[in-house]
Image (cartoon, rainbow, N blue to C red; front, side, top):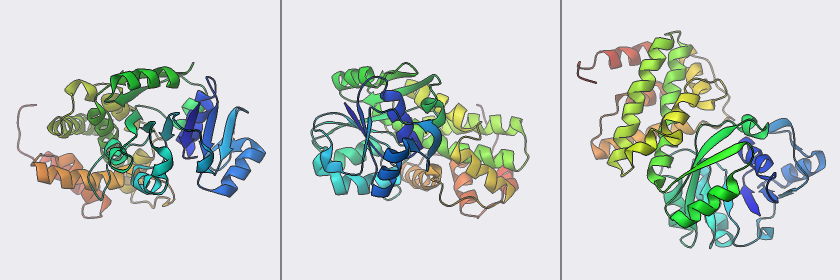
Length: 319
């Protein structure tokens, strides 16, 4: 039995895939949304056109979820604290698996640290990697990283979260896994801006490469294992997010490059993460010029051409 808290596209997709193995409870904070999904057996708001199997129980009542069983938290990083402050008492004494990618703007910490802070009896973990909700829900093959500091719990979660189309790799490096998933969103915004401004794929490849170097610098400074960033949760996720229009961060970057408006109802995790990363890098004295340029673009302090000029005018050095 697995409970998923959050009825967005990714939470719904995981529910569909995991229902091939066991019973799944999908929780939404919106009672009317729960009623609509139960009636239509489809999440028309977030993942239309894909049916919800009958062994997915849909509810807006968090008190009804079973104790002990793992919970996947599929709300955005900036909303995770609010969810746990409100419902943390009901979520203790079990594995809590964050399925969000970002760094909390107010504190500069990641999802597993938020869980440990607010639900100290829980076992924090994170599920991350190159994936799109519709691919998972459609049964297309996808590989993800499950990071949990407690090795035995990580092994059990790996078994329960692996499905015919979802392959789970395991690590104990929660810091590296969550930083890879968070930092790649910042680089994806930059790559989208480059493409939106018509600067070409060669420029995008260069930005991805230098951005990946930044990801490694920060992750290692915060205690991550270098190999983790070279895996699914780092390089793999970076590649997907920086090259596909399915990525919200990439599409947001394209809108910046074209100077077009972007739908404010769409969650773009990389916006808050860019600001949080820039602030953290300053305190750690880590050089992160790509992140600084992306933050300036987001804030309207630089145009894309100015950001590119700034990056190209940096001192020449060895790679």
